[in-house]
Length: 304
Image (cartoon, rainbow, N blue to C red; front, top):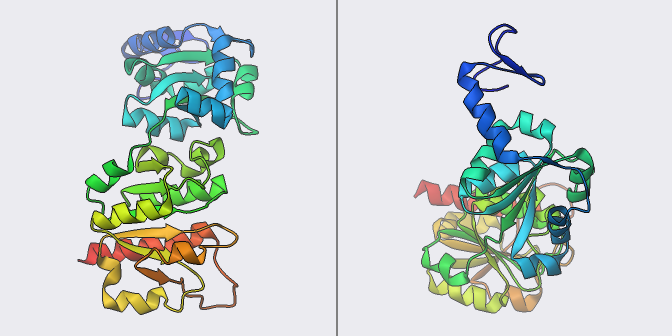
């Protein structure tokens, strides 16, 4: 609906299925002007250029990636200066009338596209009709370290984009300031990772590349204690929590989904800690273990 609600049949001007009252006419005019004519050909140069961003090499060349769905696009627009192009279907434009105007005000190119074109652009089976081309948002490690973070994440050899995106989302929810993807980890701009982050990729300081050892040294110098989440450790969260260690500024180091942290990387940390298993489960997956560890730190830090 346009504005605060739908008007009666005799109270406004019918535009398709919309009834726009006097207060809504200007909004509708700005919205339709912002999106321009509909793109109906998947062979359009703009569509082809955006579609190429599904490939990592093309993302790195363009320093751009795709954010799909209204939630991710809303968060990208909230950051400002990130969205360079917005593609949306007519139906999605009606459901989310503010997106086109907000993108246009930020200088982004706004395109209305047919369902066929959206299906070509989207990386999901059932597209939601909203997709944006966004600038890379990563920052140098020195930027994260210089912000005096009290909670951060280091991902070492994390390969699954869904897991990585969920850790991003969890870190954001727990109040962490940044997530570092080591040079052997998945590309956080992978579309599945972006979707799994549910917009959190636009909230945190995102750091890419670099050796784990260098990252640990940098964050330790910035005043963070580095804790390795290691299921093989003889010390658990229950052991270190009474010692007050979780209340200190902390960088959590998480390893690969299948084999965890190798011994040489675990040795870089100040302490190795296991998530306690009280039942009969063999272990927790990466995303679940990260949630337990990060929230344990967040609670301890908030109590201080």
